[in-house]
Amino acid sequence: MTTKDDVREVALATAWNPVKKLADLGVRSGHAYTAGFAAVALSMLSWMTSRGKGKAQADRWGLFIGEWAPTFFALGLALKHEEG
Image 1 (cartoon, helix red, strand yellow):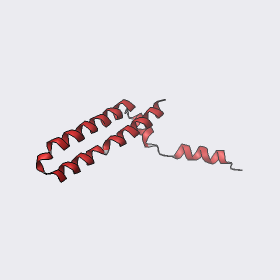
Image 2: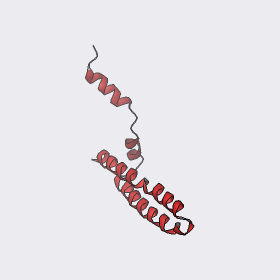
Image 3: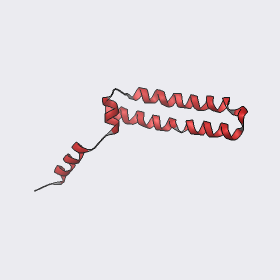
Image 4: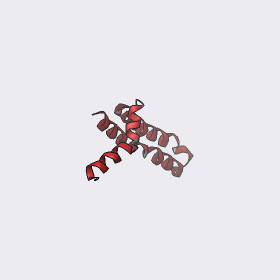
């Protein structure tokens, strides 16, 4: 007879975990945090350098790159959990 624990065990064994895969490849939480801070800096730099080309374009580039930062910070948290 199959129990819930048996089903859970099989599901965990066959599930693909991209965060674990990144950790196995050597990516650490510090790398993701660094990328997050770099994305913030790049967003500000992009916004400042493209201001002369028109406000709409500067705002779009700044926002586009700025949205990378939360993704990298969340990935850093997930990798920290995987390391722990």
